[in-house]
Image (tube, protein in one colour):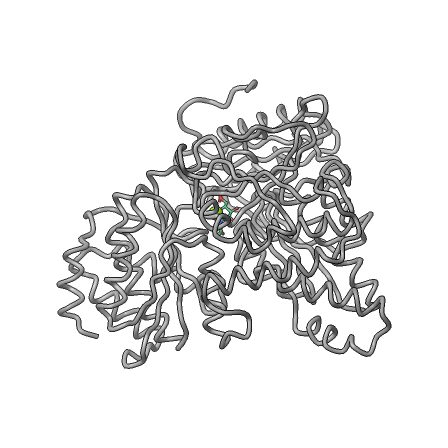
Length: 541
Ligand code: 16G
Ligand code: MG
């Protein structure tokens, strides 16, 4: 390690003194102007991680659904997963080291992790469409090269595309070719093969309006469109030509405001979807004949997908297991439907993709989705083996196995991916001959409400049981229990946000009025028992 060079280049990416940032659930995220030093240092860290794992590491420059002025960075581990927890801690230490301590922290990390500094490093870099992203990704590259690492700059990519590239490169291209062309071809081929088996024709099933949040999803979908246009026509809105990134549009806006994005004209019963700013989340929606808006969130997406996969498994007659992984935010109706009607086991993990992903790996087929629309399905080698053996099976079973094979190719198994999920959903709807209303009618969401409470220090709240119960401060959980008892079909929980300095409150109940009241009462309890600051939560929204 040429420490002289590190110090020299670091001075060109100087840290504003006193600035403290945390590598959170989705990496570092803050105002773009505060991130130059973080980017340089994450370049350094990615090079070290690459040397240690002897694998390609990814660095993605994006702040997802945050406002355009923000930016962020996250590292992608060898199999396309989120960075290992001990390295998240290193990332935080390195990003927060004052200029004069940087060398020591770098050496510390190398020693603790037994990094062979002579080893080669290879890092791939991608970025979203934010105005600040190009310069910031250059700072990442500076960091990589100063440690003698090599790099490939993919330029503009969706976050899931970068995960895909990392995965391909570390599996000797068995998973796919590590190029955009490879990604487009792999997914489109699988999609077209699936669609061929759909019996219904007519284009009512085959066109979709897509709100791209004025982000990278628009660019990439445009590049990809002609590969699958024979099977699906997409009409893009909020494609970045006019509006601001994530402003009044995108999956996060639609999900949290429960209303359609601006800039999209929706006729009744038309199928529409929204991506978020880096295209790793997707939600669907439509207007019914009375003009009412209906949201189809990650829970209903998981339900559609897991029901279909379960049917295929039954068809093949295999005892392979399937599980669905959700978080505490999953609507109670979805959990009940999956368990009681579909007879699919459901598991709950803490919020954050890495927790869901990890759990889903325990099953032959693990489907995971957050209610916000981030998710995918993972398939074990046992499933692939079964497909290989299917040649000896009778015709009907062979067909199901072939479908399963295409579905596996269509899912991005390295990360939740709006483009890949969209194609999976469109294929399933076509194969089952389902309209968007029929899909929506699988079950009715329980009315729910999410609120935020400002407190002096959100760390006073700690939780257990996949965030569904508060352990501290004392008395809070007992109070929540008493409040929940006042309403029917009710449930509520609180947790400190991993991305904002607030406590989040979730409540659901049999009516919107009850859910609103319950959320409000719980917020007040948090305010009183967990050191609320500013205005007291008030009833009424
Ligand atoms: C991040 C997570 C997302 C989670 C959200 C929760 C990843 C890649 N993203 O965006 O999964 O739902 O944080 O935010 O893990 P919160 O902690 O502020 O509620
Ligand atoms: Mg995102």
